[in-house]
Amino acid sequence: MTTHVPTAPDTAPAAPARSRALALAVLCAGMLMIILDGSIVTVALPAIQDDLHFSPADLTWTVNAYLIAFGGLLLLAGRLGDLIGRKRVFVAGLALFTAASLLCAFATGQGVLIAARFLQGVGGAMASSVSLGMIVTLFPEPGERGRAIGAFSFVGAAGASIGQVLGGVLTQALDWHWIFLINLPLGLAAVLLAVRVLAPDHGPGLRAGADVPGAVLITAALMLGIHTIVGAGGHGWTSARTLGLGALSLALLAGFLLRQARAARPLLPLRMFRSRNVSGANAVQLLTIAGMFGFQIMVALYLQQVLGYGSAATGLAMLPAAVAIAAVSLLLSARLSARFGERSVLLVGLAMLVVALGLLVRLPTDADYPVHLLPTMLLIGGGGLVLSALAVLGMSGAGPEDAGTASGLFNTTQQVGGALGVAVLTTLADGRGGALAAAGHPAAEALAGGFRLAFAVAAGLLTVALLLAALVLRPAAKS
Image (tube, rainbow, N blue to C red; front, side, top):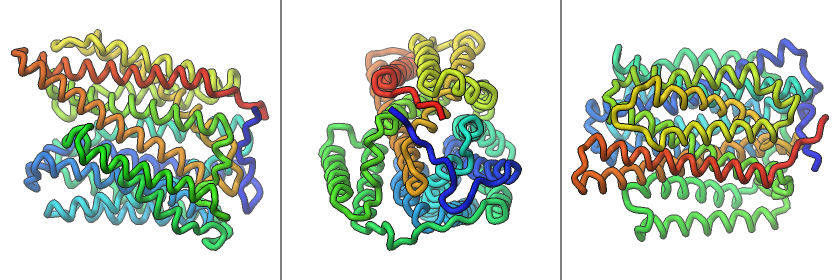
């Protein structure tokens, strides 16, 4: 099957190499700020809880409010980028994210912080949804495009690990307010540079595809679905609340798909799913991110709760993973993809991740970091192969008029996968740990047993992703 990646911007010829490089740097900088914020908050949660007197249940909303807004609006924001211009949506998203960060930093109450985190999610969705679409239209030549997506994927993968290091350092050295204040200079610089560097693009306007009923249906379905997933751990996966909200979310999604099949100007053209690689890449990404994001949370909790690491030490312990991903993304991914194709590179990267998490299934309570954890951190470098290859495959088949929508879809499956992975793995770990504690096992052994189960399930998710990629995806045609 021939895959098609947009070969030119929809409104202008290819820009000079220097300006395209600057544009890529701006897009990566904006994404780095958003990704950093997503992980930097997790390290500071205990400090936020103590200062603002959150209950454990209410504290989760500082993360959930962001996830619901971010994941729920990605698809809509991507389509808006196609219609009114991706630069406009990107700049507006960065500006809103930066302003919301200021509100977070000076929040003195729980309600203000949660509302500000929701606004951060809205801004993050706007900026993230169009970034990948802008990159694939900026870089028409396959080699350049591969290197650009490799750099962008590195920012997404390594930024989360860097955020944990930075979050631990800032929280311990100063206080939790600084994890949001640091966004101000970064955000302002990114907005000013984006206005100056990014080439203007003009979509056909809202009348060309303003599917309001479809927008309402998909936004409601995604927000309700993510809300159901993140709340399932506390209410139970088989509770009436979880099953009822889950069924309603699926009904809204079904209504959206029916609307898209009949609408003259659909929000999400279903023709994109005719591409085996587009559909397969999004499915593989959902499973991969579920396993990897859940792993990231679980291994951080293991380091702190079982081995007794502090916030900064936990971040530093995960730094080799960020370095490995950086090296693979920036130095190897594009070259290997050009020589062997994205599908082959993806399969190798997924195999590395399966082995990485498989090594943790027998993790002891008194683990020695160089022996038991460092090999996994280094093998996580396979994520640098996986994410860039998936990005190319996930954007294949999208014409210039659909690049923002395809980018929003790709980011949506990423966010849903992350929320699903964390919810499932934390629930399994808590359940197993509680059962072992009730059976009389020491606290550390009970906790470790729960984490081992979570790592095993994460490895299983990645194994399914590997099999799906091998069976469904096809090599991309050489340009």
